[in-house]
Length: 104
Image (cartoon, rainbow, N blue to C red; front, side, top):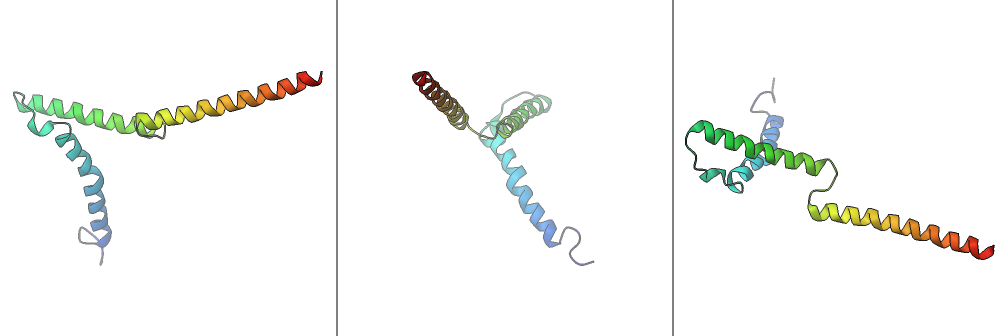
């Protein structure tokens, strides 16, 4: 059974992908979240703090994935585009109404 198990090419690809995606997230929580230098008494308290940080990180990922844009600027741009389209539609309706009223 060549190619099966941990030494197969597919397994190596999956391991690399895991290193990219999963471990990068943990690195971000530890470094940027300041969890490498957390000062709390007892392992249990450190564990609770780490869990809260990871939960907040995951919640942020979910909230960015759901609407389809990842940053507040992206959300503002999407809203601006939506509002701009609404204004254009309202102006077009107003122009049509003025033409109809001018004929009468």
